[in-house]
Image 1 (cartoon, rainbow, N blue to C red):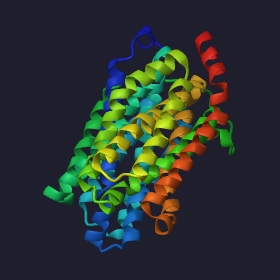
Image 2 (cartoon, rainbow, N blue to C red; image 1 turned 45 degrees about the vertical axis):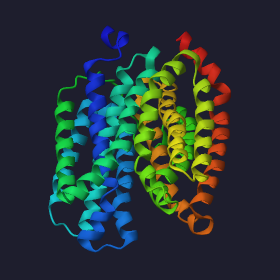
Image 3 (cartoon, rainbow, N blue to C red; image 1 turned 180 degrees about the vertical axis):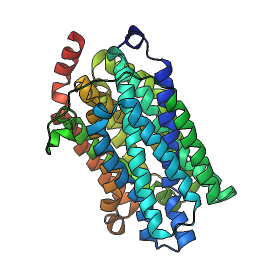
Length: 397
């Protein structure tokens, strides 16, 4: 790897890869929040079927990550990124066709598969071009693309749907896919050459064992955050805080955006624990405040605390998964991390759907406070107890 990559963080490839990831994820979240409505309005799908049309994308993305993490070292970083972005572009263009409900489900699955390949490639490329001494800071900046997409994507989707209809959403997504392809073509990332793997099935071909402990902690915390993604809008309407609810993800994103540079640098200098434990306590406090909100300021203060908490833990966990992994298995480390994240976000709403009818939204968020506390314990036993050893090993490397 060249000295440029060793000495600098803000290289052209780092910036272009981060922007490409941002616009891919922007399209992802834009479609996630509007696809159920599209299926119900256009194809008379039921509410449950509309939700499945939206969420089957995540299943496709999981398969894409499984394959991408295993094959990226063989296929090559840039080649897999190009395969993914071209496939995303083709899939997005097909939304304009009157497909019917079941072909639409197939398209959503294939679109998710393509997105899984593309985002596995962007994460792996960034992991390889960030200087080791600045990995926490660099991953923190890169993961802002996901946070910004989470905050801005739903806002753009709702605005376009209200003002211009579904075709405007598909057109916006198509433009984003084309831009990501243009940026991908301009990249010259380093490639890691490895020997061909042995034939036959091995679990280590699909998961990185060193990244699994922190990924398990990520899974538990993602379960808790899924209650925010899936139900916070309905909760805001129920407690008559619709206006505050409309700003929740924007405030959340700003909280992460402003804090991430400091927390990433602090992790690089003093290890993960000094950031993670306060962050998860902030996440639990924000969830508790949300469950008891009776005014707009409380609702938005909860968003700030969750941004400082979950938003920062998300990037720290990814940085740890990478730091603990040999260079040639970074693709698998990223894949393992994102599979855990996606599973948490995907399974959470299904599980919480049984809690809401019994305890209501306030009760559900109180339950999620307990889930976060359990997540703190999982992090402690999976990684926190040996974080000092990891930091010593890293600094001595």
